[in-house]
Length: 250
Image 1 (cartoon, rainbow, N blue to C red):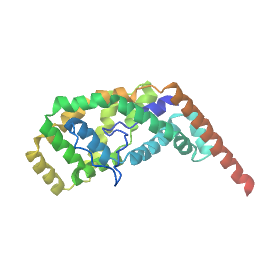
Image 2 (tube, helix red, strand yellow; image 1 turned 120 degrees about the vertical axis):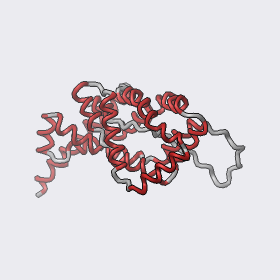
Image 3 (cartoon, one colour; image 1 turned 90 degrees about the vertical axis):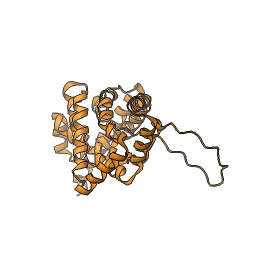
Image 4 (spheres, rainbow, N blue to C red; image 1 turned 45 degrees about the horizontal axis):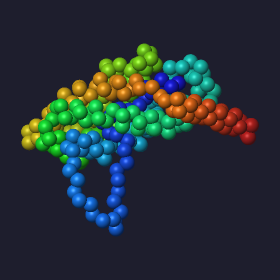
């Protein structure tokens, strides 16, 4: 079960980091120079709905678990909703694991931005992800992302391949772009003419692919493994007990 949790992490560019909020009566600090490459990372984090990502992911995991494990499929038939209850139970562990791995790999991902873009281009890319069009594109990717290839790769090969990560990412981008109109594409094209750094996003995505695959294969810590096991046992016990009580109460 731990490999399912590891394989299930959605590895977009957005880190799970809190955005500091300044109190109204706090003294105004001197302006701090913003690293334009780190700012790309921050811009995506600001625009991406991480809770929605985990919602999408949890649904896919529940479906894949029920279809991949014969004993669990039998249990699911006897206690409908068992797989979803299982995933809901270990979602906090998944969220914490994701945050830890994302932060550990953040410098390497930012290094890709530095290698592919100059400072001006990085500024334009960050601005794009904060724009209505950029937010819409990110939202569409999140809605379309299901991680099926990634999870299947982990269950079949015990390790997530770069090809699986690429397949899921490509499918999510296609799903997002399918919602765009011809006018939207014209607007994107005009924007890219003015800000050619946006044309490098494809190359950046390719460079990030192997890093994302490596992130998918990061092992759980001992504490995470124990928390995952405890969550699974608790979720199974609660769901089965509740399902067993219902016929008796009739």
